View 1 (cartoon, rainbow, N blue to C red):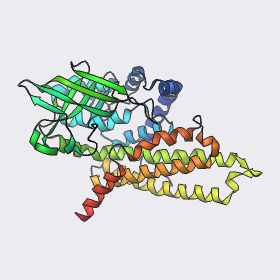
View 2 (view 1 turned 90 degrees about the vertical axis):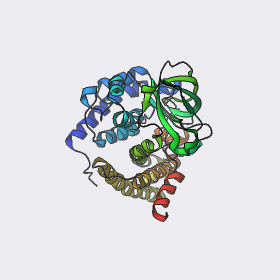
View 3 (view 1 turned 45 degrees about the vertical axis):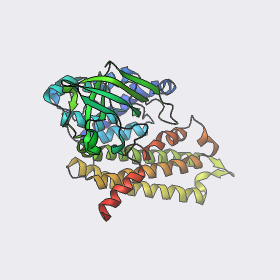
View 4 (view 1 turned 45 degrees about the horizontal axis):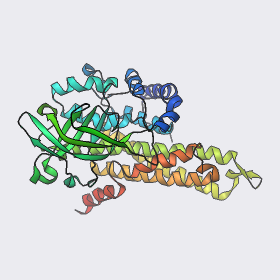
Length: 380
């Protein structure tokens, strides 16, 4: 079915993204996978190409468009290229809104030009060794010392943790406040007492640096408070719909790409003297996956439209996130099976897609959390 989501401008942007991937990303990607981190140079190249800060006002060096569809194009193309290691979506779609919607004028002028040029790489630090989706379990603390905060605690599974120059840290500023006693503090590279731990060894997305972060008596200036004091819970909830939609976009794009390469493979691969595609079981498998992808694509595109118009709520974002990512997981497993032994070989795209995509049902809120949000909205 023809998609009506994108205009000619979006498709021109897609061509730009594909050229960027071909020239700046794919020739280096295998080395980045071995290194466990992408180069800082590719972030600068992304900035020069205008791929960073799409929604940031032009006066700060950004693209000046709040249209989420440009971010969706980026997510689709990076997923199809098999290059999730360069976490531009995290930078643009997840962290960017905190800086643009909560930042003071002084903070915007201090941080956004570098955000858009690629000189300042960003991360957000919520998850702790003992607290994932449960914000009430956060133990990182920030004590008020007059003109500054003293930050203590640790975070884990932080994407961009090694490269990040700005880290938005969720910390407890009111001990008795529960989830409503949390604030967002921006910690900058070089702050005394801010240490990075291991670059964590994951089963997939190996070039996407994911780290442990440690804060020991880190002095954070009062002017680095982002948003309202003790307002982190509301701030986080406000931006989660876009984060989950972005993950859903990558999910359906990943499933569609796996279906494409597997369809080609079963047409070419022969068994018992004829192409696999001639076997009824194979045809049924492809038919089922194609139908599931088509139905999911329709829903996700509708969610993108709703979000672009300002109407996407947390419930439908959660529906899109859990359904699209679980579909991606199922399709990856079935497509790998259809590749047989070759599917288990790392040099085949289906093998990397299988491991790279497995995190999709976990980060941004697990499938179980998504179902809880949906169920609570329906049943109270």
